[in-house]
Amino acid sequence: MTWRGPVDVRDALFGGRGTVRVWNVAEVPPGFEVALGCELSARGSVGPHAQEHCDELVIGVSGRGTARVDGVDHVLEAGAVVPVPQGSVLELQAGARKLRYLIVKARA
Image (cartoon, one colour):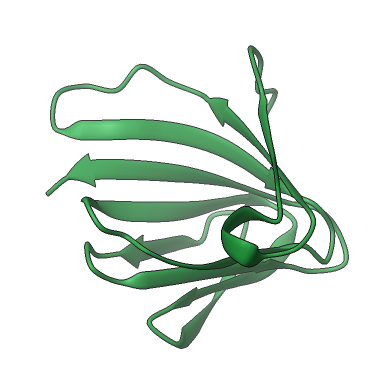
């Protein structure tokens, strides 16, 4: 999968470590907020943050890591889908290689 267009580079996102590269990957239909392609650097992390406004899906594309939702770990790898309900706290951790995933947010 090739993600094109402007990339937003974020360092130490939500107090994590490493770099996350973020692309808007699709126009979203009514009822959705955003569809983002993300690439987290090897051994990087995204710190804990609450899903304040939307329900969210985290969908693994490549690499392997962990999505922690409200303290429960879920394997994040190609094809894995991790639901993150509004109000939940999400953290991400990449393994030895960069982790690519999609974030799809639906209006609550």
